[in-house]
Length: 492
Image (cartoon, rainbow, N blue to C red):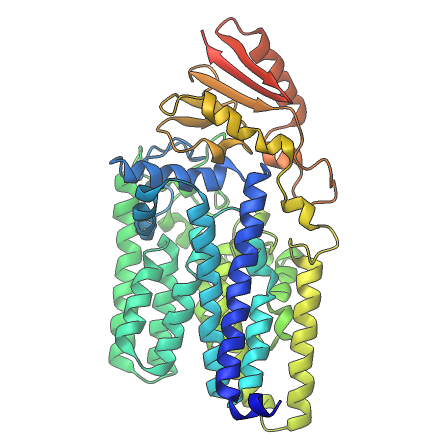
């Protein structure tokens, strides 16, 4: 104990480093296990794997797995930051690069939380409280365990950008803000709002105005020119209805201008949607681990545009913390909570201690109740451990020619996306050289999981069974592999 007291600063640094390292290791292990257990999806892990693999092989962001029906990923999402993964695919191609770096990014996004809490609250221990709470945040857990997405990966850019904004280190702030804006089209709105924060709160008028103006220009350039440029019909794929992927914002309009007009002309219907019970519950769960402190400081306003984007969607997954969409909000929820803790509670020792304990308690309860990790009573390590059946996928990979076109079952897809032509079954089932299906439910040992086999299939079970029978009877295909539930068909 005497040694710890004398070297208190180094003890905390070492302890924080070990916590974050353990976090990255645990979530890499869990996400790898989920993927190897056939519980990842063609959309989205397979799609990201294919576009990075294609780019590494000279086919810039080309994709055949898009639910939008577009041939270039930029038609659906503008995420040039994904180029960072290409060098690793040149070493060897695997979607596990994406899963590992996503876990690493979220782990590193916790460092500014600790640093800012330690500096603002003048306490290593309180810095550790906020760090542990952040690492227990179920919004991040669920994002990490739902394939790969830029909005989860970009938490590291958002976290460090705001930290350097607070420290007044403009070059580093600009560096991370550029990476954040390049992560996905709408994330430039976070940079715009950080510019507004600089202007109104930090009183850095000129710099704040430049940041906001540049980010707004970039956002409009991407939405109105770059994304339509890659689209097959010169429209934003996200706003177009199709049979596979209905637009989340069709009720608002089919174009950005139409959506803005709807919001201005009919504010009452917008308010009714915003104040719906399920959306209010979503907002409450976002701040539950920090005892709702986040609502009462300026940094929370930075995420306002993204919150509106999430809750104005007609698809409930965008305002459900079970999914990945809210991960990017996490750093600002915690930065805002640190500010409120300093303003309201720091000067009263007993209250300060009570709230610190409450944050840890509520964080742990939230992780247990709303997370998808083995902390939850609905899960165990066995849910992330590959079975003998799932290991057999390697045998099929050796059979399939690497350049053959494939129509594949949704939850098998990410194991076969390092090829130019791969489709989500039954799409492409009439033209692909091979069809791959699996009759075994990977979720059967634990039916209490949040995501079931029909969800993993992205098909009705009856339709899926009928499709298998049709493939068996097809004169165009012959069954060349039938073992342990796997069915591999080859075009005659």
